Length: 293
Image 1 (cartoon, rainbow, N blue to C red):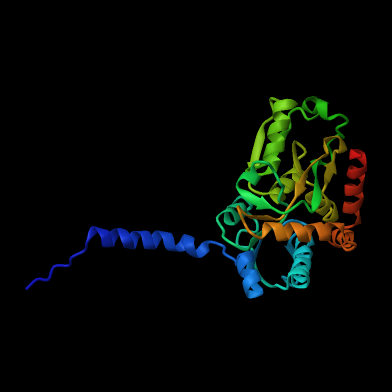
Image 2 (image 1 turned 90 degrees about the vertical axis):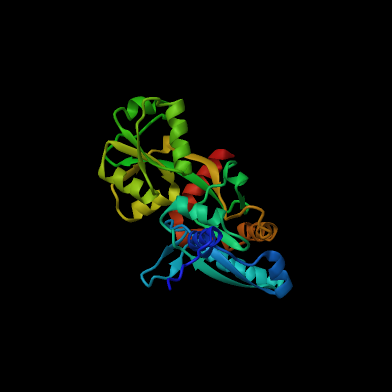
């Protein structure tokens, strides 16, 4: 007697949904809410990061270091002292070299998840994420190969950089800046797209017919590494600030704001900046700050 296998359409659909939904669910970053932390006196949270010179990186022993790491260590201590909450962070770097994927991970996360790195606070991003108050002013620097003549006037960039291509990091504020530059100063400018700032820096260092506009920390790292690049001060921009990014409507926002107010105004702040970004970073930031006053 032949036995018939009976499979209902509903069962098939359910199995398919489980098959395709499970990986996404497993990949979602999740941490305890602040409300839960207050109730329990402890919290499991996630510190997701994008590798950025001086902000987040790894030393020779593969240990995480950088300004953001020191800052969040200070947050752990501050939270215990001021809120009585013991924070137990897990560092997550599965997309530490892909900014777009990193931001997507934070956007889709839930609860106590904090994104660390050179994350610019913009009006557009504030519609999809929560941010801490700024912890540092970014200086976006116009960079070329060192053989290129110094740009004397930003308004004359079309003539000075005639025949050069702009290296653009897709999906970042670098793309926003370059698009605005093309619109306002250089309508015939051609873009060469890449996926990361280190990649843009490498191309510019190797090719005198390329230029880019990157956060100051990449320029400082290039100088430290001895790369043949040049900064063009006429192209400096300092209208951006970096913040810690969180999923939208995170209840950690208010407590993070209180911490950041104490940290940035505290005596250890400049020490942390100098230790991780170097004294040249402080000089650059102080120089830009004085120009704005």
